[in-house]
Each structure stands twice: as C-alpha cells, then as structure tokens.
Image (spheres, rainbow, N blue to C red):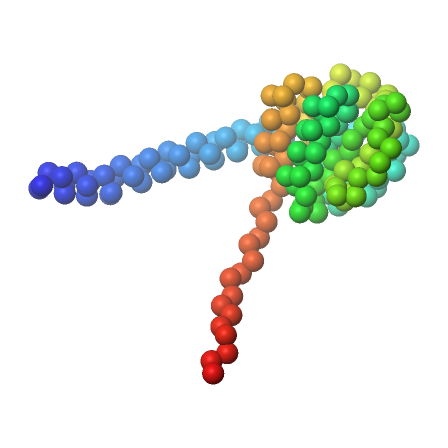
Length: 182
C-alpha cells in the first residue's frame, strides 16, 4: 500500500503534467505549422481581380469576411462538400464560400438556408483562369492564401485551415436567474 501511494503521488505530480504538456505542445506545433503553410500569400493580379469583379457580383461583399473560399462544383461530392462547409460555419459572419457552376450545372433553386454563406456564380472559365485549382482560399485583403486540389485529402486540409484561421467565438457569460422567492 505504501508503494501504491508513492506511485500515485509521483504520477500526479510528474507523469500527468508531463503527458498533458506533450499533448498541448503537439497541438501548438500543429497549429504553428499550418499557419506557416498559410503564410505564403500571393496577391491577386490586376487581371485576376478584374475577372473576379466581372464574374462574382458578391466579391465586394466578401471584404468583411476573414475567409473566402471559391469551389468549382462538378459532382455530387463537391456539392456535399459545399453543404458541409456551409453547415459547419453557418452561425459565422466572417466566412463565405462561393460555389462556381458551369451554366448547365447551375441549380435553378434559390438556397435560402445558406444564403448568407453560399454565393452561387456561373463562371466555367474561373478555375481555368486560376490554373488547375478547384478550391481557392482568399483572405479579406484580396490575397490568395492557398490553392487546393480536388481530392478529399485536399478538402480536409482546406477545412483544417479554415478552422485555424477563424477566431474562436466568445462564449456567453453565464448568469444566474433565480425565481422570485415567495
């Protein structure tokens, strides 16, 4: 019993703090590397900016957004990825995603559930203008933060980068509301 208590005390004082430190440090390093990956911002050229102004009528509205994602929608998987992003960041006001459809694939319905997050654009030549990228992340300063491919791994990486870039929401303060005493 004496050795058990000594082991318990040593583990509470040294082992658990060391394990939690290593866990927190690994998260810090992961976030630092991801931010380093997003640090190489490329400014939009005059042609790219004018192209965005011509094709995307909501381009000026996204200036107050911290993260703007442009996605070319070619398949049902792209559509589900789009709705996954919209559902994940629905309560956020600092995120927007622009879905780029070819004219034949442009949906005829108006999406009211995600109308504040999803902008729909008919611009088939958009991605060809930005090279072989199918997903593009712009900052609010009109800088290209990152270009992503079409694979699911690239989408997961884009999602991680979005989560890292958006600031944490402040929690509401808890208040105690008591019933009137009679």
